[in-house]
Image (cartoon, rainbow, N blue to C red; front, side, top):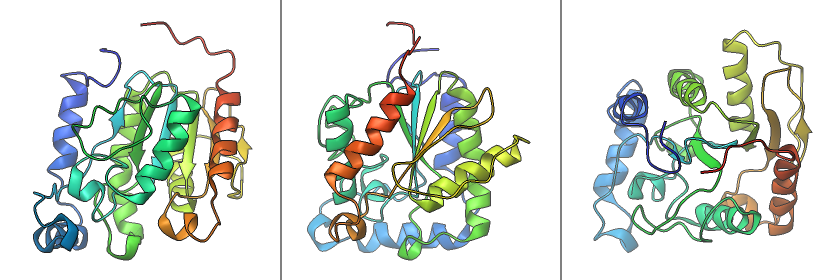
Length: 240
């Protein structure tokens, strides 16, 4: 398997093609296409991506970051996870500070961003209305997350951004017949999973609603990433 942000041209490319052409959820298909057609005033000159999003990052990563879904005018516009909106900027600053990204900004898919020992994905691949996916839509997307995690063979820590991502990841584990302990979502909390499974760290989602109200501050995000780094202590990841 190739290292870094270059996807494996076999399994990874097959999965990517299946994700970006998926039409399983009529409500999401309609919404993402409508957003891409109407656009936002400040982005009228953009050609919106308007399709489901595959994960992005280091395919040999020890850290997987799981979010909710692409933002309507962020990932749904730029074609990359956590790119082109306020949430992306907040998160990327923290990831850069913690050493998981080569730059503190994520503006568009040709901006030179590279993830360092981290892979970003989401429990839903299309921008949902009001950022609220239906249970059936979460279930439809769960197989994509499962296949990404199966290909990411070096993962030691999972960072779940928000309760939906947190519950979505636990749902995935249960679908794999893992004996998952009963845990409650708490920002900054680190959860030990059964042997053979990555450590789980929870964080509030870096949405504008959370960051602008002070529910999630830079200091809090940095602390959550501190727990992530503690979980990677003693890493045996092979050097490039």
